[in-house]
Amino acid sequence: MITAALRRLLSARTVAALTLTLLLTAGTAACATTTASDVPRYAAATRGDPEFEQTFRHEFADIDGVRMHYVTGGSGTPVVLIHGWPQTWYGWWEIMPALAEQHTVYAVDLPGLGDSTGSPTGYDKATLARYIHTLIADRLGIRDAQVVGHDFGAAVAFQYAHQFPADTARLGYLDLPLPGPAIDAPTYRSMSWHIAFHSQRRVPEAVVGDDVREYLALFYPQVSFGGTAFGGTTDRSPFTEAEIDEYVRTYSRPEVLTGGFELYRALDQDVRDTGAAPPTQVPALLMTAQGQLDPVRATVAPYMSNIVRAVDVPNAGHWLVEENPGFVTAELLRFLDR
Image (cartoon, rainbow, N blue to C red; front, top):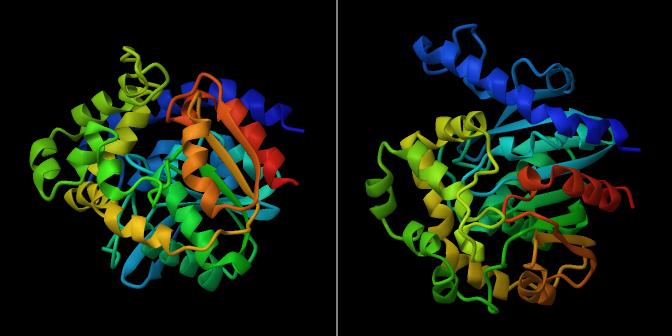
């Protein structure tokens, strides 16, 4: 059923990486919004990938003062993909064609991040979920969304299911201890240096400054399989140079860099919102980094009463899609097709 899609995963990253590198090189003299060949900057990352371009298109919608960017394509039951930090919708590009063979895919840039512009009224995950629901349910008329989130996007997906259960058919929750009574905000900030650092007011912006690429390139390996966050020593990044360039393109905008850190600064509100949430009965899939299933499940199980499958991803740290795309794709398709 997914042979062609899995076969694509073997070569897609290499082709796209080479293409994006050439485009970024050619576009250094271009204006802020287009490459040298008049390709919008938000579309440059997948330019030259015929399968992607034939299936997907970029769209924008004005939602409560935010111009939200999303990428959509495919046919079948709707799947909404929500990224975390420090990524954008592009964190899903590698597996989107496989999902689109059987589903209509909507990969969104969170309000204030990626190529979405404007500032949301808050970066707590309950507020961000309401923005996405307004886009998906009210503007696009989708009342049976299968919502999948990774990292802080998983917390947004959880809040979507909690606040709008009648509009949520399934919930995919990927690799995030859920902020809440099981891990309150001070404890959450103590889990890693970067959580405490990003939670500070103005400090991370001042430190990172114009060195966004260096900072992200150093950060990505730390939470990869065998990285220092998991007790290892590897400095191998699961991202290509071209993929890093794409994230640097958006996070180099000061307002987007700040928006990313605001995701961490909202942890106190996130904990309160989780504590006030009754368990959602929406059927849920839980996926985590290798070896992290039990500790993550302990934080989400009190709030998800219908976890139909829970797995950790072999040979993957935090970057599940990049580190084991075939496994993640197969698990998502199995879950979404039930």
